Length: 180
Image (cartoon, rainbow, N blue to C red; front, side, top):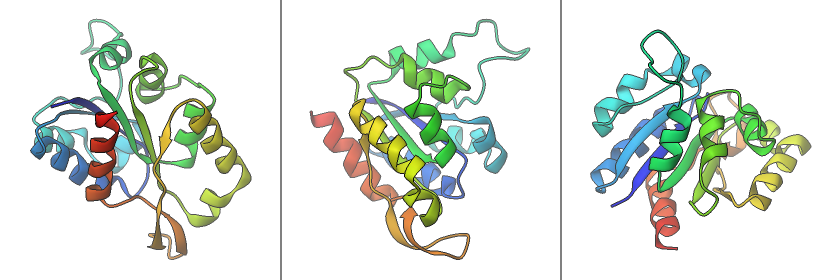
């Protein structure tokens, strides 16, 4: 089975990312989670560690670190990168190569032949905005497979497209990407 990095951005949909990590691990994959610092304020990385049995990371710097090369190590290790959920800010940073955190530096260091999937999750108005749509188009041009969000009731109370796909759908997308 594959070695997968699941990168999670700051979105209320992050609870689905925990389920996705669990389902991928149950599918036989080795899954390591990497969270943006803002995502780690919504949910503890330890939850990802509990459902995958693998270490989760937020930052490559700090007193407990001996070397700050986690982004390179994760990129060399990963056979596939999936970013789920991807907030508008994370989509923008990835589209423009802004290496501001472990998630974005890892994405830049990932060898170009490795599959990379991104699942946006945000308010429908934000998703439809011209900047977000431009950034998603840039990611597609750069070889990312953009997984289309679902529609329905959002945490903010709005209705529309912007929901993170269900974990079972994301697992299917990972399986398809690994077959190529």
